[in-house]
Image 1: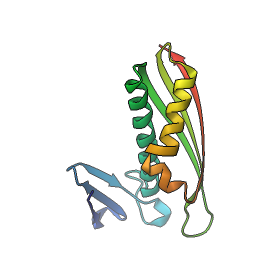
Image 2: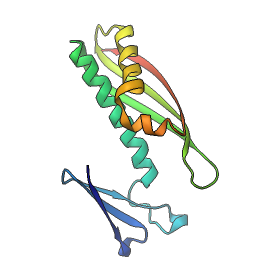
Image 3: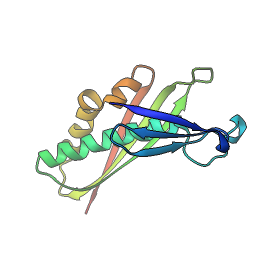
Amino acid sequence: MECTIDWMPATGMGFVAETGSGHLLTMDGAPDGGGRDLAPRPMETVLAGTGGCAAYDVVLILQRGRHAVHGCRVKLSAERASTDPKVFTRIQMHFIVTGRALPPAAVARAIELSHERYCSASAMLAKTAEIVTSHDIIEG
């Protein structure tokens, strides 16, 4: 996996990342750090990537189990250390899974498998952060 990050000096503290798959992602710093608030902060993209990784796993696990999953939303909230490096210290991941007759045990197991075995992003963050999961199932 590769990624190239370029600073865009005209933006203050804006950066553009080009991923190995050829996609672009912009990031910016907070105004108090020289940024202009034009894009997500780099640590926000780390948190979003972790949620995306986990949601991907949950959907795939449920689909492979032949469950009728129609939606998966993950709401994340994170706490960070107060001193540099300001690593994540606690991450709450709340999954809202929508589907038809989804067995609660299957949803719980999919989240557990993502957290304990498949999601490389949360596995890395678990080195510094307590990761707590919860979920709701919506019929639909």
